[in-house]
Image (cartoon, rainbow, N blue to C red; front, side, top):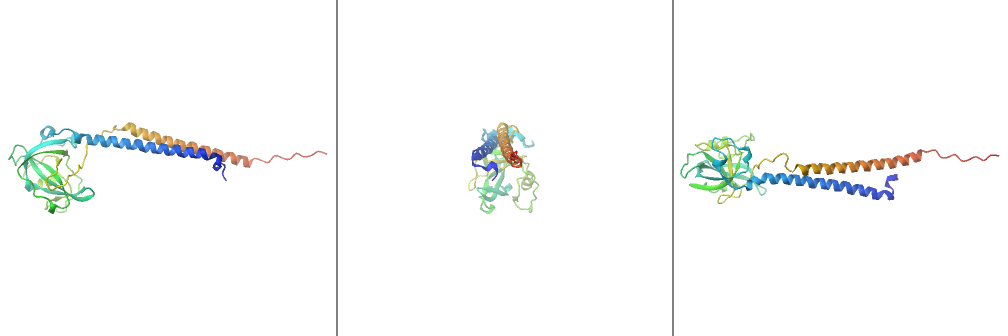
Length: 255
């Protein structure tokens, strides 16, 4: 039996296992804290006080990259004929569709103004969606940049889209659209809430200290494994050296 497995060394092996397990566990704990910090920062803007849409962007402005998830207050007139359905959207583990209706932003009755596509909610099947709203509305929505993954619409003639791309939505309306869309904080009647597709960007240094702590703990665990391995190797080396030592010669009697 190898010398390092002798019962008197079991305590040392157990100590090595405990130290490595603790280092790995603490490293993952710090990694979780780092991820939680980043998730928290990403969600912070979504809980901010809503701003008037005009204070965030205009109809001809590019999307402000620092306003992803910003709640905005929007007043306008629904454009029911521009309603589309965005496929491939999940809700509580079920595949379905976003129900999107443009809202012409401006004073009541100004249905020709530039419109903001509004995700009114989620539905399992477009056939089950309630009729599009008409008239005016005052609502709050989370602002989102338009999607553009390059996914091809297999049937451009219908009202089902594979992604919420402004260039696709504009084919269904007779007016300009904002370079953004909103996800209604309160779903429309007969619809389930839609979840945010994109969250605010997270600063690179957010939670960095926790990530460094995680790396430090894992380094300590690796160092503990190295020390244990060296100790075991030295023990086995001593045993080998003892086994290779020549037997002392027996004294010879004289006379």
